[in-house]
Length: 52
Image (cartoon, rainbow, N blue to C red; front, side, top):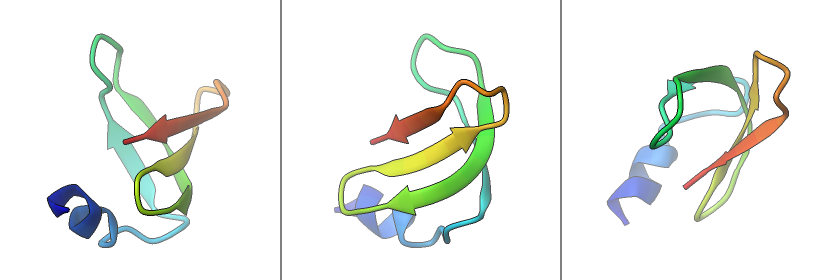
């Protein structure tokens, strides 16, 4: 529930940076979110990253 409340602070179009476990830091633009995930289009052209 806490993670969901924190996700609501973001807005579509926000620039975000995150570091998934065992991966390098990714940067991109938030394009969609729902109750369990957010979708970020990464700057490196790697396609969408789904974040829990």
